Length: 148
Image 1 (cartoon, rainbow, N blue to C red):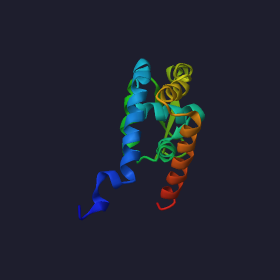
Image 2 (image 1 turned 180 degrees about the vertical axis):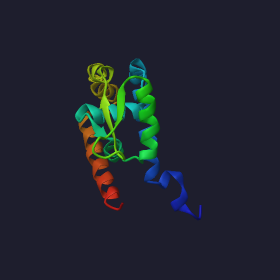
Image 3 (image 1 turned 60 degrees about the vertical axis):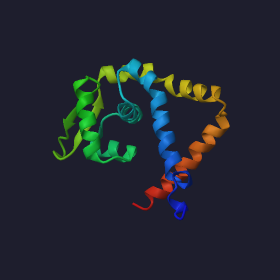
Image 4 (image 1 turned 30 degrees about the horizontal axis):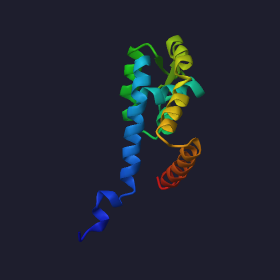
C-alpha cells in the first residue's frame, strides 16, 4: 500500500479508541444493576468525590463539553439521582448535588472497579500491566490537554 500511514493497524488512536469502547462494554453488566449508563457512572464518581459542584466543573473533570453533560444531568435528575439548582451567587451557574438515592448508589458501586480488574486479570492481564497502562494513558492525556 502506498499510504502505509493510513492503515488502521498503524494508527495510535485506534487501539485507544477500541480499548475504551471495550472497557465501557465490560462495565455495562455491572452498571445495569444500578440502572445507569457509563457516562452517568462517571458523573457519579465526580460527585462522590465532591458533591455540590457546577456543571462546568463536572464537564472539565470528565473532559467533556457542557452541552454534552447537560442532557446527561437532566436525565439523572429525572431518575432522582441528582438535583440541579441555579447558584444564588451567579444565576449563570448551575450547581449539581446528589440526592439520597445518588449517595446510596455509592455503596452499591464500590465493588465495581475491583470486579473489573479481576475480570481483566482472569483474561491474562496482570494488575501491574493494568496500572502501567493507566499511568501511560494519564501521561498521554496530560500531554494532549496541554495543547488545548
